[in-house]
Length: 94
Image (cartoon, rainbow, N blue to C red; front, side, top):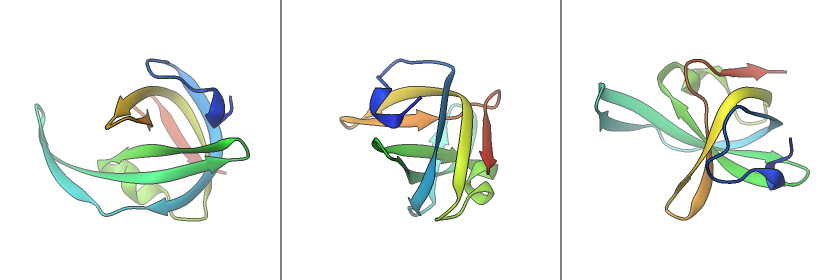
């Protein structure tokens, strides 16, 4: 699937793209306690989207990496679409 094809609410999404940049890691409080989160920009030939990285996912990728994402879901935050990869999903550097 291409980034331009994703829509809010989609589940079990697979994408391939390049990590353009990773933003500052932030501490947030969730119902599971304090967690680290960072947003990254994921780009393919159809567009770009925010990829939300949680905890160990943050160290899995670096700017310039080509990645394959499986089992993701799409949400909207502050008017922008985001890719979220749950524990059951996968981020793989290719």
